[in-house]
Length: 164
Image (cartoon, rainbow, N blue to C red; front, side):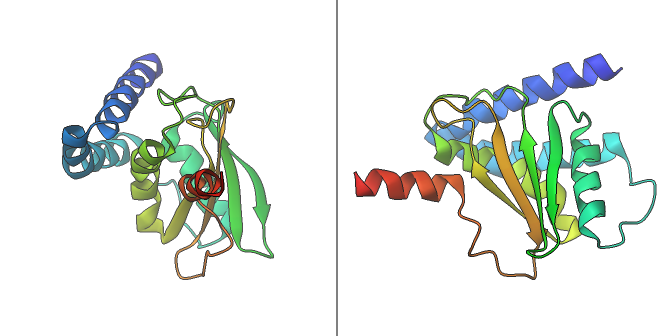
């Protein structure tokens, strides 16, 4: 069953990634595919074994649980001072090396959709879409807290292009 789920997830990821890169596909991806895959993931994974207590640790564990494989995505650090959970996604992304960090931002609506019901803000700090990167670096923080110190990858790359 796990192997089947991994293949289905990979296929859905490829489909969503492809859709995010075309003008027509963006509407389908944003309005239909991503919301469907968020609901499907929540149905497959079920509810957490215990209620989330609002802690950063619980938030990180829930993200790992929803994605289903710590070899694919895992929490790397919990910074209590900044109230931030950091993680990385090591699973191969269909956008890897494409340079299309804007498509990555749209594709990561899936993770944002998974974490929003838990009151979390989800930010991609570094993207596999950036040339030479093999992992994504992410941050999660309670949505009620400011996050101006967390610069999303698509904005950082755009600033770099503008400065060039």
